[in-house]
Amino acid sequence: MLDNLLTASQGEYSVFTVLFVLTLALVLGLIISSVYMRTHSGFSYSRSFVFTLVFVTSLIAVVMMVIGSNLAVAFGLVGALSIIRFRTVVKDTKDTAYIFFALAVGMAVGTQNYQVAIVSTVFISLMMVIFTKLNYGSLLADNYILRLFMSAGSHSEEVLKEIFNKKLKKSVLLNMSRNGSGDDFELVYSVTPKKNVKISEVVDSLSRQDGFNKVAAVSTEEDIEY
Image 1 (cartoon, rainbow, N blue to C red):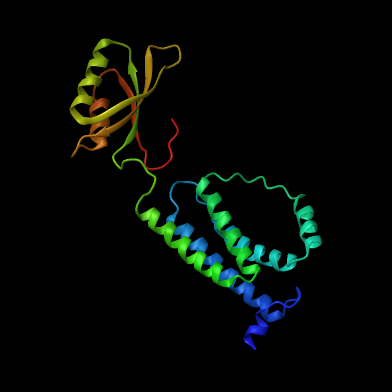
Image 2: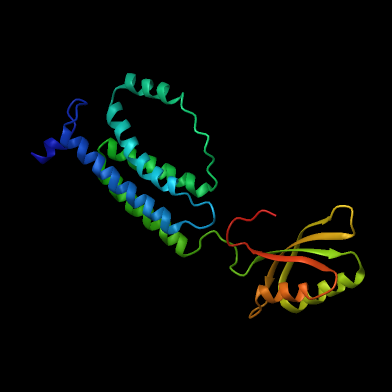
């Protein structure tokens, strides 16, 4: 009897089937949003985006039930949804992956592919958590972007080279530009401190020297623009 309640017949769904689909979509949507909150990093966190992940999973499940195997309804929905314009910019590319995640799960639930929906949610959620724990895709943990303003003069260049040789294992000049109409140069380096040397020591050593202004370091563990 349960199979009859949870199975569509000629595109018609019973109340129990609709409730079951919506409940399963809600549960899986909550799992997806929880994984997102657990694995999110950076400053682009949005509470409304977390709500959206839950709603999208349920709404797509409803859409798939409405469409069923009716091509006319499918084209009608495409036409109706085409008038909606989404102006919200997704700041993190990983957020886009979560949107597709919610869409795929909602489609699987709506088409009554329950095993695909459940197994995929568990597998991809574990994958997301594991990749986050392993810090997959990030550069070296001790790699930094060092930005400083240096006054023109051979003495400053010699001091900079001396400090770099003493405290850094690696340094690569990424950008050099003149600061406006003055004599200061803006330098941007990718640096890796030596073992047992903290990046704060490098910043402090440069800040104490004459000819160096606005010394700052940023970790490259996340995406960086300079």
